[in-house]
Image 1 (cartoon, helix red, strand yellow):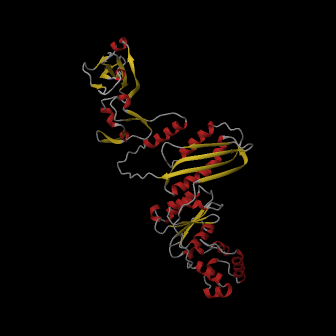
Image 2: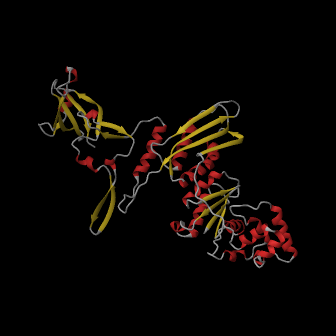
Image 3: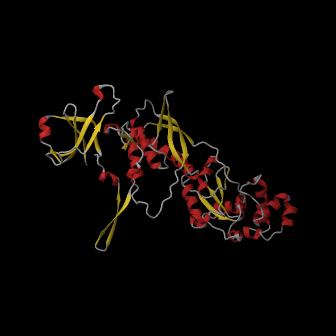
Length: 440
């Protein structure tokens, strides 16, 4: 079994282990700051053991700026190497080769999933070896198991087993149970947005690292700010238009929200809660358009929603009348999915992304007025109708009760004096002409 040990060096919550589930389902936290990952069957996903180690260090950077890691056959040796030989990958089946050059103090870190019950016995053992003239860890390997048993009993046997990769320590699959929450207390209360963001960001880094390890998406972020000189609280939520793991988007929305607050007092403490949902699984192929405009759209509409601004796409509905046949939606419509357009010029090829290809042949305009605009006689005379016959006729249903609700329209294509292609209709009841839309 190959084990990766990450030494975060600063005390952490046990939930920090969730961030490393991306490396393997077998992850275990050991107080106060050790993470053990079994990578025997998963390292090839990251290009080998070195790739797994580099990925672990990348994740660990969210928790600690000076984290260290190492790989060995056993958790005990991996922990020791993480402390004394950072980024070391012990040869498979020959982890004792890494003992060369290490002093006896390294024995204090030869623990793994189960720390030494007490430090005094191992310190006494180190002192005893020094009196014998043994100062290197590799020299301790020459002692037999019986010799250590006679001197230190079961503790000596345990040491011999760990030195010779005989101490079986099984890393079990991690079952996440902790909520995605964070809490912070300021010794010096803060009131400036940049300072608040700087203190909130490390907590966001950890939450989103755990989110990625859990293969989940963030749906909403709840924040509660507590004032220093009163019981005033500022609760608010950050919710993009769709679930995402885009931490930068959440930070931008959070910073904008903070800038809109008028704080009565400096902030003493804060609470943050991240609500997660299952991630969206998409199978991308070679022909997937390279320009991911859909993601950029989600960022834009999330900012608009944060500013109480309504925006989106007009989605077609099954309705008889044009003004009732569109509905504002925020999701990226299927009709707007990008397709690759290949242009050939001489012997050169250029690939472009084309959107809403179907609109180019639509018989109705893409820019529709919410309410038809009546045109006076002078405005109608300035129009140049494309044909004398209507392109479309719409009539009310026969079961309409009120005469005022009756609608009988003849639609025409017309050009304005500015060259715009318009969509107009004539009311067949009162002969009034209306402007209803523009072809872009």
